Amino acid sequence: MGQGFQIGTLDLRAYCDGLLKTSITYAIGIDQNDAEAMVGGSEAGSIFIPVNNFLFERDDATIMIDAGAGKIMQPTLGRLPQELASEGIAPGDVTHILLTHIHSDHTNGLLNDEGGALYPHAQILIHPDEYDFWMAPNVGGESEKILRQRHRAQLNLTPYRDQMRFVKEGEEILGCTPLLSPGHTPGHTCWRIDAGREAFLAWGDLVHFSAIQIERPDVAVTYDLDPDLARRSRLRFLDMVANERMAVAGAHVAAPGLGYVTRKGTGYSFEPA
Image 1 (spheres, rainbow, N blue to C red):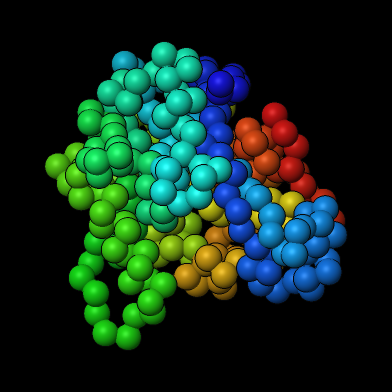
Image 2 (image 1 turned 60 degrees about the horizontal axis):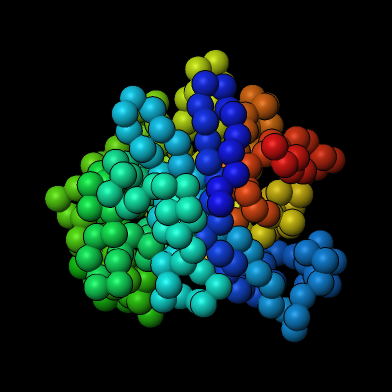
């Protein structure tokens, strides 16, 4: 079952697609003993982080933020469709999906078991910089990691090729405005969602290891295609949400992933909603 929150005039539902097994050794720019202490220990470096998704309704639209990891990544993932079904929400009810970026744990869930569109009526809203990078033909000199991710991205989005809507910085659709936050991927996007006099920020993978990177925003991860640019984006948006006292919805923040960022020394801390 999802967890409900009231953000201004908006009823927001948070769902957990499951737990993603990863490694604390992927943290960049921090002593590994310090990293272990901040996450409360690991099993030979392995830890689990949540994959959170969010959903709200407005103006006869049912809007979801990212689509989960699907069932093919890890056995602990792919719960989102059943979580939605438990509240009477069928895939065909979703009218819009905001993508923060096109990595597999955010887009594998777009597909059904046959490789077609699981959300047949959903318009996919995405920043063109992100789409253009992953949909581009391969060129010489690219890493195997990028080639592998690009292949998966194209599989995930091809069934939606006639349902894509490109939203540039500063444009607004249904109260949703993309804010480019590159580094993790070239077109990684935070979405500002207006809710009357309030708003919240869906920040995607601005933060992966929430127990580390909110307090130590200088720490990057090996998942970032440009770690230095990812650091700058993280610092910029952490400063913004702390200054504005804006709620944040994080894909990998401890479930359900919604809360507020406050200043703590030279870094920040997270207060669950």
